[in-house]
Image (cartoon, rainbow, N blue to C red):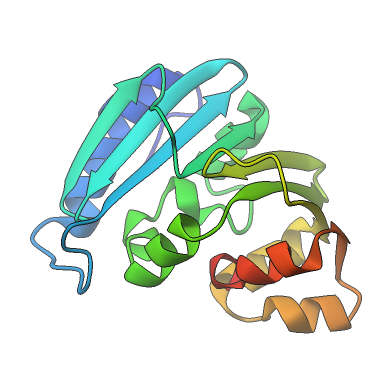
Length: 184
């Protein structure tokens, strides 16, 4: 979906996200998603928007965020803008709802608590993701945007990127390993 370069954050979430949801998930039944409610919160330079997805069929956008978000993402507006306009490799969580609407993703996010700082280089990007309100365990991942894109597309598994020295980690290794399903 073409999104204007100058779209406002609230307009994107209130107008474009529901259209993408309808286009990508309309009439599809995602196995195993019955009875689920996936909650996300995005803080983009102080503009906070919540997303609630029930059973991968219903979408609700909440201006101001949601309580007890399963996944809370903090990033700058320039990084967010690059992500929604396809200029940031591996940023499909902003544009491909079909990819993120899976039982595997839901179970991974629901079952983990902690904070992850993702630092991409080329360009310099910093994204903080808090799972289920947890400050700890905590970890930082450092990787190039190109390698991150390869990891997210499945071309390069996270453990392989780490063994090749393309992915650097600091903090709780067990926590990072629990997020492996989100990185491939």
